[in-house]
Every structure is written in structure tokens, then in C-alpha cells.
Length: 92
View 1 (cartoon, rainbow, N blue to C red):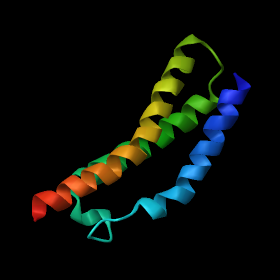
View 2 (view 1 turned 90 degrees about the vertical axis):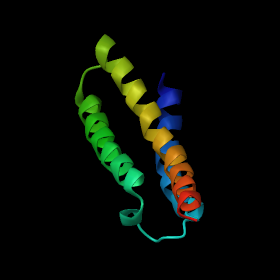
View 3 (view 1 turned 180 degrees about the horizontal axis):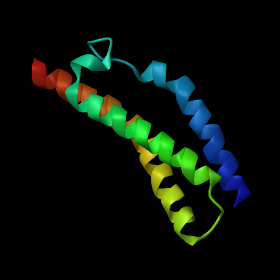
């Protein structure tokens, strides 16, 4: 569905503008959050795989793989602030 693709594209760009607003951590960088460092490298792998899936033809195994990777891509932006807050509470 082309409309779903357009909505996903707009959301993937819009989330990059919303991301700085969500930053309420005590520390400035991810170097102080070990779990978030692991999530960051998962995100890098997901972006590489989404780029590769985008070059593949629209066929059965690639459609499902692309959908799963898209869900994982957007879930990163939900999990990252949550884990940072949990880690901040853990360090108190």
C-alpha cells in the first residue's frame, strides 16, 4: 500500500525532529548508559538491514522482513528513553 509507505516515510523523518524534545536524561551521552549503547548498535544494524531490504524486489520474504524491521526501528525510539529513565532511577 503506497499510503502506508508514505506515512511510514513521514513518520521516520518526523521522529528525528521529535527526538531532541524527548531527551530528559541526567547524562548527556549514551556512554553512561550501557544498555542504550547496545540498543544503539542494534539500531545501526536495523538501518543497514532496512537499506538492504529497500533494494530488494517486493516479494514474499522481503515484505515480512521489512515490516518487522520497521517495527523494530520505531520501537527503538520508545525503548531508548524508557531504559534511560530506568537506568537513572537505578543509579539513585
